[in-house]
Image 1 (tube, rainbow, N blue to C red):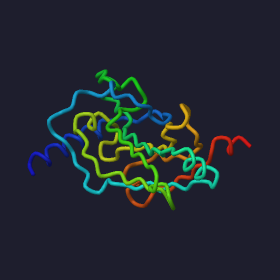
Image 2: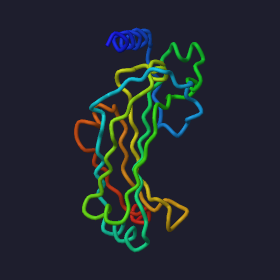
Image 3: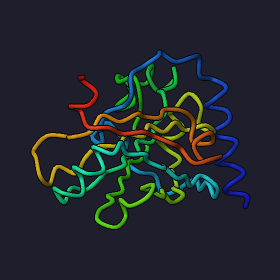
Length: 185
């Protein structure tokens, strides 16, 4: 318990030193930009979230007839703090620090009704989290795309979500998908 309290104080003091953040586009995969993992971790017991995906009739038909899957991807990140940038922490030259990545693939019967991806709670390493401007409020970016089993290209045009993990875990995230061909009409 004392170790957790010390970790929380460290995270809070770093957050108080942070000056602001630059606005940035959605994070791309950048696992190489992460600092080496620390021995201690921060667990957020209630940060699990659900993504409910609504498919257009044409998208549902195409996925079924082509035996295509659906992938929901979550990139957990934080904006680098001013201190991280000043100390040239690896990855702080980017607009975000990647904290964790996860994806869930849905196929077959999982695509019936409203396809639902359930992301379990994650535990963050305190070291990269402490280098963000808001260690107590990690961000998540959620995207949905086809599994590329029947085509080398993504078949779907889907909505996306980007916000704090706390907001994502409050209620199901609802994203709609249609075929890219439908969107261009």
